[in-house]
Amino acid sequence: MRACDLPAVMRLAGRIHPGLPEDETVFAERLDLFPEGCRVLDTGESVAGYALAHPIRYPHPPSLDTLIGAIPPEADAFYIHDVAIGPEARGGGHAGAIVEAFLDIADGFPRACLISVYGTAPFWRRFGFVEAADQVSPKKLAAYGEDARFMVRVMQD
Image 1 (spheres, rainbow, N blue to C red):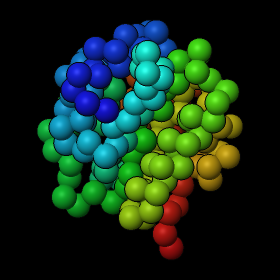
Image 2: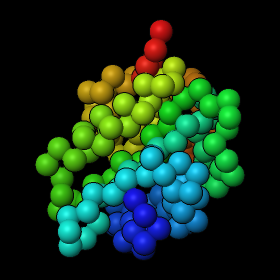
Image 3: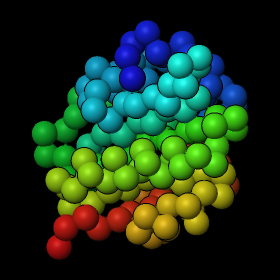
């Protein structure tokens, strides 16, 4: 992802997550703080997907639409903030490929975590994530919708 991709990413985010809006400054900040965790699926004609991930202090994923200020130096988890593929590009294995790339980065941390939305928990289970609702505040999860699930994958013993 590059700064020039942000307008297209925001249009796609608005289509995919109309009930979970985030300001462009959130995306720009993540890109500035952890560029290796910011990816786009560029078809050559348009941005058909994007993904955001970054290190956090476990179990404290950032609240929706919130700037984080900095990557914590004591980060002990890799947080997958979003993997979003437009409907026109789904079914091509793109989401799985980005998850695998993120898990390679996460291998340097004791665990990876995420908040699953829209009933996607079965997708995340395929990559070894398990639900860990008791690890995060119900209030934080509620902001992501009724079906939000906090999920964790142990990366190292």
